[in-house]
Structures are given as structure tokens and as C-alpha cells.
Amino acid sequence: MKKAVRLYFTGIVQGIMFRAFIKEQAEKCNVKGFVRNLDDGRVEVFIEGNTNEADKMLEICQKGP
Image 1: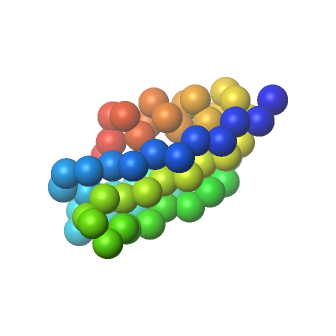
Image 2: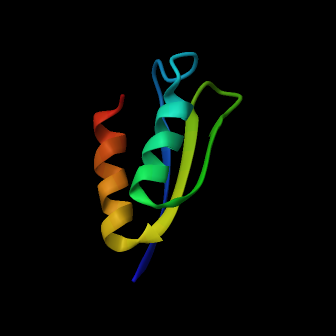
Image 3: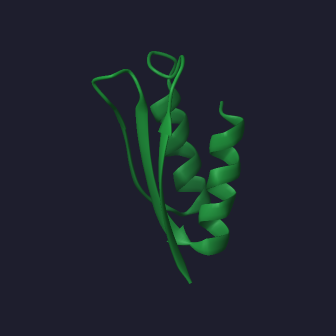
């Protein structure tokens, strides 16, 4: 079964290689999507993949780099 999730991160997430970390982990978890900086300082992450892989990526996002 497929799962898609959109996440928003606040705080110190720009300028610390957060997007690169998310991209690297998404490739390892075999999920697709995007990560981008928003004008208000947040980072938006959209992930899509099999439920187990997406859930694993969510856990990684909660822990951070």
C-alpha cells in the first residue's frame, strides 16, 4: 500500500544541510518526493512510497540529522 505525507519543519533548519540530509535518507528508504525551503523560513518535505518505507522515513525526519 502507498502512503504520502507532507511535513513542515521550523526552527534552525536552513543553512545546516537539512535538505541534503533528507534527500540522502529518502534515497536510502526508497521513497520519492521533494524538500524545499519556504519563504517564511520553514522547510517543506513531501514523501511518497510504500507504507513501511514512508513510516521509516517519518521516524528519521523526527530524529533529524
